[in-house]
Image (cartoon, rainbow, N blue to C red; front, side, top):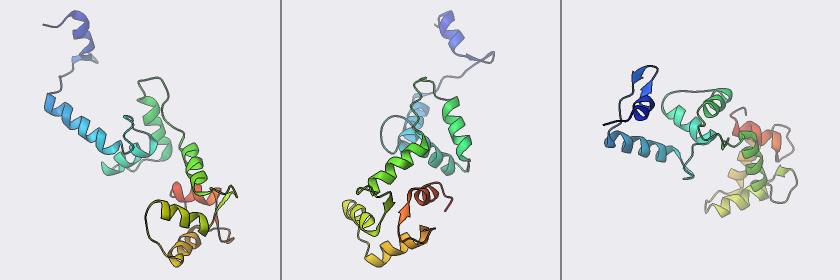
Amino acid sequence: MYSSAQKAKRRVHGRERPELSEEQKQEIKEAFELFDSDKDNRIDYHELKVAMRALGFDLKKAEVLKLLRDHDRSGLNLMEDPAEEIRRAFQLFDDDNTGKISKKNLKRVVRELNETLDDDELQAMIDEFDLDGDGEINEQEFFAIMTDDA
């Protein structure tokens, strides 16, 4: 039925690991697909954080990163650095390379997303997170927004 190599693979800590049924495998696949929001067949930092929150775990950034490192079986270190992802997202808003997100930048992004927000709503968004009072969102303020430190 099983070769000795296959039996050894099925053993975990000296006990035989039960095989998953096809139904269980399908449920796991569906759960993975639910949290793989960008459909790249891997779970990144933000997707894992969302999944863990949905399961009732409010993990700190360091704990999520440790989970990803500990369970990256590919050895390819596919996980993106969350800080780098945030920097790239900031650059998508800051298309004029001023180092700040202005109301004009926000208006463009809203338009590209086919959303409708009036000028007062856009200004309210800026006012809420503009910690230095200059009327724009700098990279440090953007990081605070994205990491729930605002």
